[in-house]
Amino acid sequence: MSGPLWLTPDDRQDTLPAIPRPRPRWATATAADPMDELATRLHGLVEAAVHPDEIAAILESDGMNDEHIRLTYGRANSFELAEDLYARVPRGYPEPTLPPGDPWHVSLLPCLLRGLVFALPGLAYVLGAPFATGSAPVAVLLASALTGWAWNQALAHRAYTWLGLGDRPAAARALLVGAPLGALLGTGVALAVSGAGEGGAVAFASVQALYQGAATVLLVLGRERLLLAALAPMSAGAVLALLYDVPDAARLVLLAVSPLAVLGLAVAELLRGVRGGRRGPGGPRVLASVPYGVFGLATGVLVLHVALGDVLAGGASGAAAAPGAVALTLSMGPAEWLLHRFRSGTLAGLRSATTPGAFRRASALTLARCLGTYLLVLAALATAGTLLWPQAEGFDGARALGLLFVGTLMWTGLLLQAFGAVAVAASVCGAAALAQTLAVLGGATPSAALAAPAGAALVLTALACGTLGRATAHRP
Image (tube, rainbow, N blue to C red; front, side, top):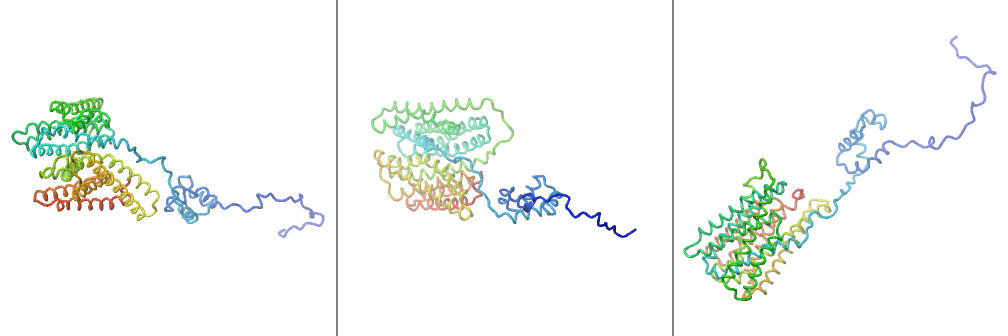
């Protein structure tokens, strides 16, 4: 039989098998969209993504395969699902979690201490003035000082590079070899430029060269307080010599005590530093330190022009030049602190700026603020030195402008040097030093000779604004 079976009236059921009950709430509610649940769960990651492929990588790392994605979300694969999530969640780009504190914050006191350490050795010239009369002995001392300045700048860079690599014994070894060589070089230059009857100036230059090398050792190894303590006897004697007539024998003793103390401390630090270290393969290139030496030589020449130009020309006394020289050396402490403040300011600009143009403006404003503060400090130190130094003459317009131009060159050069642009800073400062020297030798007036440092100051400031206005220059 192929037809349906009809139930007879007696076999049909007119009642339900059970009493109907209300459906539970979870059964009557509409099922949640899995895409909404996934977008909510991954909201923080999705809103920070800059491309759907980032989201696809997150999905795959979460263990989602294509079969699971097809069954659960109705998409073919992780890339299609990622594109849907990317379109569904608006871009938020949340700010990253910032480390506590300012990594570039430094205390002002250690920087001022280093500035004082830079300035105190200049008091040795107060004690040694009776033994170096005339322009010829002064030229011997300055030639030796410039040589040591350039050599020790390069040596310090090489030692700091070893310290940056975490190899303190290698840094000590570099100083142990380089400092004596620098002292010999400074003495040799003094002998080369000296004439008959200038043995006292050569001896003074030799002690000066030894001190420069030993002081470099203590500064690089972080022993500024020891250096300051060793300079205390000579500094006290120089102050007394300004106020009273100190016998020549006492001057010689004071001139010898502090350099010998610095030399002994440096030797002790080096002998302690080289212990336990092994000479590793490779290391920083020697030629990488040459631009730092050129920068030191160039800035040294510029400082001598602005501080001692009139003295070398025979038109002023040493007392007239002292305030400018002391102001420049003392200002190196605040200059170092302001370099850190620039770093802090640009870091804040990186965090707050949303466009490259906004960061360039923030960087330029920070640069102007820090450079302006440094020049104000330099001018204040020069003014105070003029008022306090015995027999000091006031600054005329050319000398004051020269001081500010050289201060601008030094600070912007150090700033570019801190960001790795030392070749640019050394080239500009070297060209300015050479041009000013040639102008002075050619008989140019002081105002005309200022054209070289003025132009170089403008060039370095513009280069600093352009170079440091890019966010990529501030990568850690």
